[in-house]
Length: 316
Image (cartoon, rainbow, N blue to C red; front, side):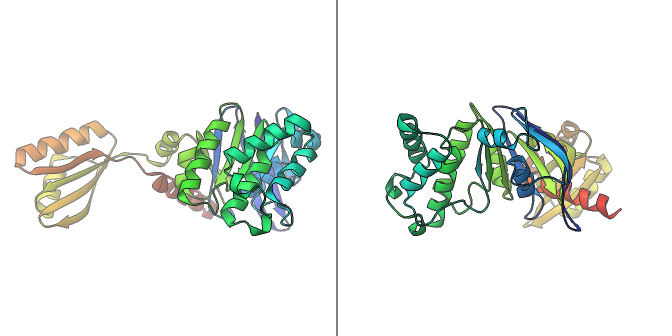
């Protein structure tokens, strides 16, 4: 449904996006994850025809963003980073205006307005001026305008910005509902949001795509060796020496020692061998095991490892 090839964007001497290529299929939620200024919004503005790339191209629903921009816009619902709101309009008046601009009228317009007002939680604010809304309700209104014409592709730039925890859960639920019949691409710099809403993640750093895949695939790419957390009731030096002598793990880092408890992070090629070796050693030594678990990278660790590798590669 979305196919980008070699997208590059220069703002004078500044390279905002460099040779970015990716695909998003129908029914898939893909998250663009990266720090502020990484190139996420630039990618979205190219896909929505707000910007013409310096190089490369993209197709949305088989339509070229360069040669068929009007057709692309008809397919897309877009929530930009800067909300496209007319603050002197009432919420209902504004949504009706956007719906008519999108070609809706009569019963179809009413049906779509009722749907977005209900799903975005705007009923209490329907007769309020947009200028009177809180940041969270403005965000909801912006989301409603992106969905009013029932688009095939939904592109959301920081969709949960300004929302409270309850509202964030509602938006997550709505995104998953949309993905049943639509293509969804969203950007965020919040790791938990990317993990909670996305089937697949594209990590962008300094304008370059440094990795893309499912959470498990990204963890596998970032984590070259398996990791096991091991905690026993024993002295640090005694336990560390015994682990080294038994050859449990290729790397052994003592995370902490407190009140006679030594905690280790063990790394090696074979997770099962480390778990079995640590367990047998504890049994042999008579140590009480407090923790012995596989410890895959968290999303935060995965992100940091991948972006750090990219920074080293760029420096080289």
